Image (tube, rainbow, N blue to C red; front, side, top):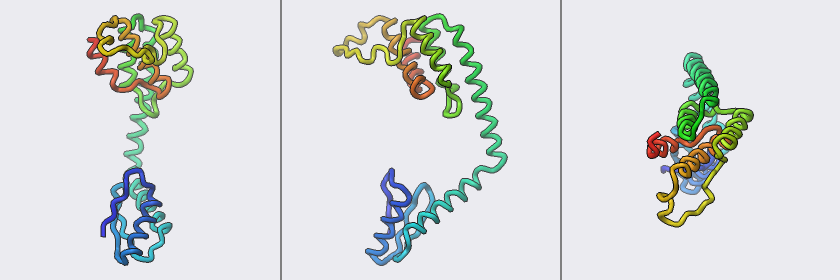
Length: 189
């Protein structure tokens, strides 16, 4: 018998359900969880099955993360942090809304979980946006425009909206959302 755990299920829950099925039908139950196959027999203990799965998963990780692969990952992350640092320094060269959006676009491409602006850098960025361009986080988002009114708004209004969205993402997540590139393209930046 095959069991298909639902998306979002924890391995412990999947093992419990599979044991219940095996006991109820008095036959073996097979299931795959995160690409690891498990076989459950009537009378099996769900806690031991969970431990077995965790051990298999750890073995798979240990086999994948060879010293060479781990070093390559660390080297890439170090380079990414350096690239972010170099890009951040170009903030002082930003002199227009268009430049600011291009700066955010580049920021999105050099930011990662391990390479994002720190609190001090985010504060400096926010202050520059507010003081030099009149852009604040989430700008023009709460403005509910009647249908068709967006196209009537000025280019500056739209650019400030986009910059405000990018700033919001950067302040909350460390970088703007990738969709910034599509909007920047529409504004021919």
